[in-house]
Amino acid sequence: MTNATQTLRNNNIKATPQRIAVFNAIYSTNKHPNAETIFRYLLPSYPSMSLATVYKTLKTLKECKLIQEINVGEDSFRYDFNITNHSHLICINCKDVSDINNSNWFKIIKEEIRSNTSFTPLYEQVYIYGVCNECSE
Ligand SMILES: [Zn+2]
Ligand SMILES: [Zn+2]
Image 1 (cartoon, rainbow, N blue to C red):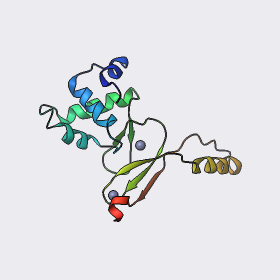
Image 2: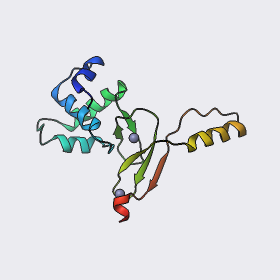
Image 3: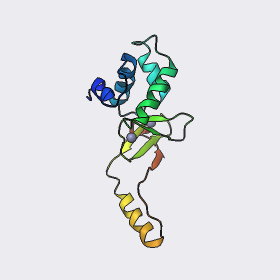
Image 4: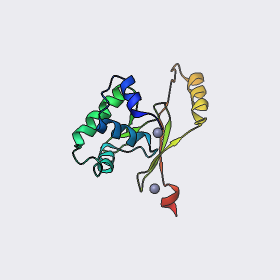
């Protein structure tokens, strides 16, 4: 687990208990939560926390490139501690978002684009919609 206090301080963010909690909430899951999910998850332990604080903290963490915001086509953003470019699988039933690693197809597509157009592809963010393992049972 990343040391939240140290990481926040290294980025000149005041390490308040609520900010640490938001940071840890994202870094402890690969579920790509949105602000409301984080808020509901933290509320029992931080009853004085407001949704606005969660949003503000997420904005700060994003600006410091400690998390990335992803848009999976919902009306709110999801948050990801993995700040590298990577692609996602999205369950249309339970809205579960998971990472796709080793996206070899992009290398193939990149080559294809290079040889057929004058466009230079740099990175990709692919969202693949489907049904997750749990929902298909
Ligand atoms: Zn599902
Ligand atoms: Zn991700």
